[in-house]
Amino acid sequence: DIQMTQSPSSLSASVGDRVTITCRASQGIGDDLGWYQQKPGKAPKRLIYTASRLQSGVPSRFSGSASGTEFTLTISSLQPEDFATYHCLQHNTYPLTFGPGTKVDIK
Amino acid sequence: EVQLVESGGGLVQPGGSLRLSCVASGFTFADHYVDWIRQAPGKGLEWVGRNRNKANGGTTEYAASVKGRFTMTRDDSKNSVYMQMNSLKAEDTAVYYCTRTSPTGLHALEIWGHGTMVTVSS
Image (cartoon, rainbow over all chains, first blue to last red; front, side, top):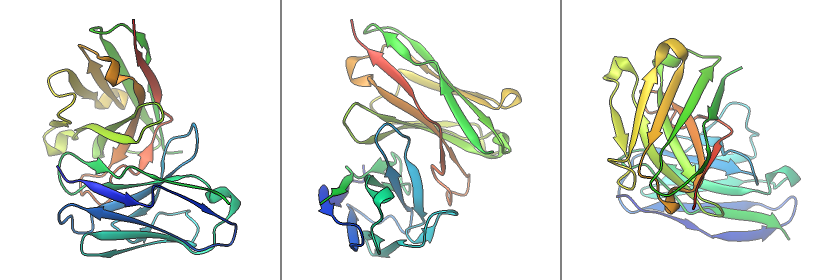
């Protein structure tokens, strides 16, 4: 199985901060990587697909990038509604696997 | 509105069975795959399995943790996918989400339902 490692596991940030979250795949997955935001008690919501494409309706402060097996989600200016847990997903190879998640909370 | 709605969760004893349903609306259900994802309380997301649409064989894939115990089927006339869960274990306790995936793979797990809670306990 492809292992997805995610860092950091949690971070504290302030409104307006630039936040970067990284996922690394244990082997090549091309650009078959998505980023999801999940708020407590809610279903995840897709933010980014194919590593760098912004889901329709998602604010442009969210962006994704890739370099080999390392993938990055960046929030350029953190907003109050962005405090949540972020998950990455590889869908290149079965079984699909998620990173363990990064919890972003208020500093 | 594009929507997925799960139902069928509940409390079941270890070794028991449960059938989850996922009903789609707002899009052409027959053109899409359905993936099931689960999340144990306080834990991360785990892929459970995929049901392909009939145009792509209608076949299924399962995570090793549920293979042989869970079975997915679909009924395009009802815009629905079902997941029969047998021989349930305590570790199957989770919120179960159904999601929409495009056959091209470009839009994997794009749309999510609200989830249904399954609790396996005596």
